[in-house]
Amino acid sequence: MELQELRNEINRIDDEMLALLGQRLAVCRSIAEYKRANGLPVRDAARETEKLHMAMEKGGAAGQRLAALLMTLGREEQERMMAGEQPQQDRRAL
Image (cartoon, rainbow, N blue to C red; front, side, top):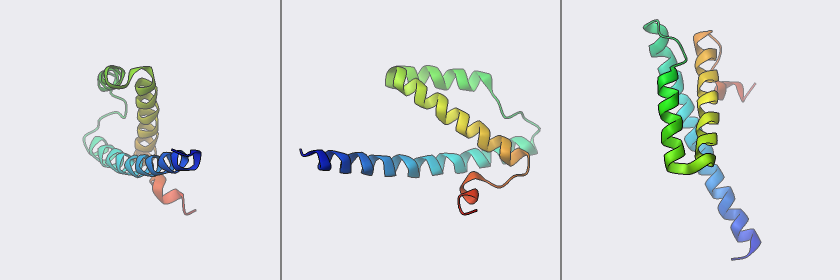
């Protein structure tokens, strides 16, 4: 494969990952609504530990780092929602 073809493949994968990130953040917003309605905190340490262990098993250190970043983004989105701020995707147009 030529370099440009490989870069095009990376671009395609990145586009898919970003679309999945948007879907994940939408679910995080729904979780925030549930937690707000039920008086639950944003952070669930047991859940985070479980997710990090699963990510390590499936993707090694890189998988665990990615999972940690995704959880941070999800927590930030939930905190914004619980504070009554606009969802992250809606801010892009501002």
